[in-house]
Amino acid sequence: MILTLVRFRLDDPMTLEEAARRFALSAPKYLDLPGLVRKHYVRSDDGLTVGGVYLWKTRAAAEDCYAGEWRERVRILYGVEPEIEWFETPVGVDNVLGTII
Image 1 (cartoon, rainbow, N blue to C red):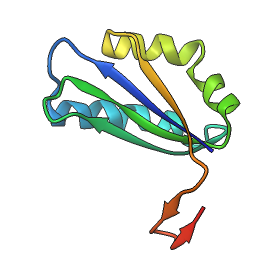
Image 2: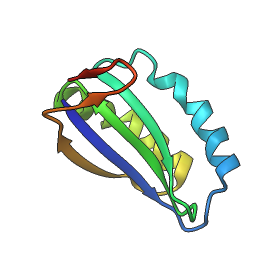
Image 3: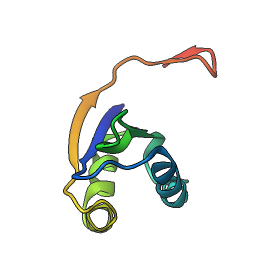
Image 4: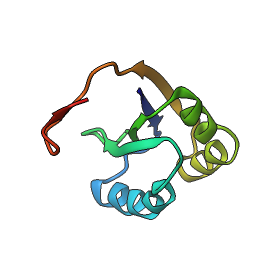
């Protein structure tokens, strides 16, 4: 699996309430997204960085998502270019399911 850390470094801090509102509006777009296993939205303590941690079945699925429309949408929403870091995840622990993946 592939894990991506996507960050948007903002000029002005975003409150937790504003972040939660924006995240809730975009969350439905990720339901049933091909190749996406899980997404968690994140906000730094100072509110100057927001983004998401994504777990993907394949890198190709992630690249398909981050191309084109997604990039333009998040650029409009946050006013900055996204930073994307890529990680391979050969082993995972899921305490909800009680399994090692």
